[in-house]
Length: 544
Ligand code: F6P
Image 1 (cartoon, rainbow, N blue to C red):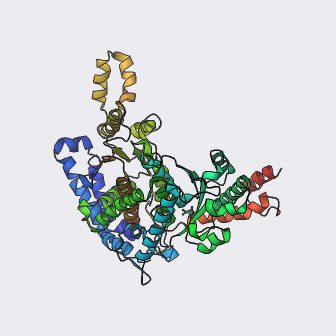
Image 2: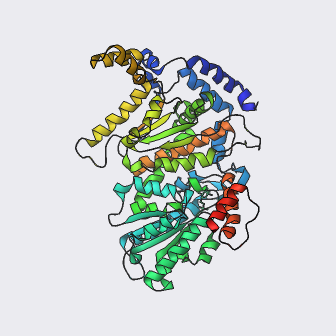
Image 3: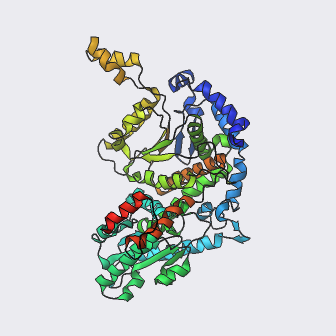
């Protein structure tokens, strides 16, 4: 057994779980009129209601004991202080510096990184304002109105999710497009929507070596040159974002349109850096800075608030509670705001690429679960798809509900209906429906006898299913910044308890290596090498 699972705090939680698992939240709410006040927090208009969880004051105390035993305060200080906590890549982890104010001091290798951060932000402002105003134009003098981000993973999912979410703030004449997949269909179908004269391609890649991105960028470049009839057009229609400035210049991108970031920014934590260029172009630099300000507010809260009042700490420890002590393997993210419909996809990378690890910081295999599968869908769409499983499936699936009090589109009764569905779901998941209640309902509907008895078991809901609710006024850039940073830090909290490195991703490399080996064989440039029988047969089928 590992030190963690043998530790006093872990053992205390194990013992506590066997007591509390027999209690229902229904009973807990009935017994405590102050439960909502006790188990909710607020920060700058963001309400975090975690009262519908299978916890008591004792549970929270024991969870925070575990956080303390894991030296969470120390790890928070190490991250904010620029220590190289991403040890397997020997890198600091400083997405928090990207949203820190101009006069902050954040040292990496003896150098304050803040002047560089704000130099790039200033460059972003100059460039994006000139493009938005139509001062920086395309080759034929027309304003650039189609922004096409070519990037994948962290160089796509964050900007895509934010551009979708902040559509109400988007430039009325601009469209943001995202091409990621090496499947040419992704690019080809996007190109069909574009007018080359008004299109700006942004090649976004931390490493500038990613096969998908460079392949799509080369094909896009060829399309542009063909449409506009000359190579010189590339200078005005291509920008790049990368830590690898040598590679962007080799690709032929005009240095004035190249935006830098640094190896202490993880790909999936990079939307706050120049990787946010499509966001800044689409919603404007002022709104991008509001997004950064919201994230910074959450950073300060995470760094300074006592654990008992700390949103990311509590959210993270609730995940540990269910994952490690109730055996839940996944959680659902359920935004009751259509603009957040890409949030689950974004969180999939953030959460699963970060904590999908099975060796600890010392390289030892762990003997406890370290991660969750994240999934979800916006609004009532999910209700008509997979909520059945959340209500009556055999496994418990904790869920996060997110909802704005006001809609950007206040049309008729839509928003009241949306919110009534949101709150009804969390209430139903908590309460469940007992056999007696189900029976009474069927009787009221005029049923009786054998027919009633036959239907009854299907009408019972176990309930006692945990949910968190995040409620905010209007989904604006500041609130979105807070929400994203909240999830970033929650993931970090869990990685600290599990003693894993949340900031590397070696698992992704293996598939990339093999794909590189298979490509020349599939192209017929090299004979098939030794593979397993399945792979050989699949490849032979393609080779004909
Ligand atoms: O999927 C692996 C990964 O390295 C991610 O971590 C990263 O976000 C993505 O590839 C894209 O990498 P890059 O920005 O270097 O093109």
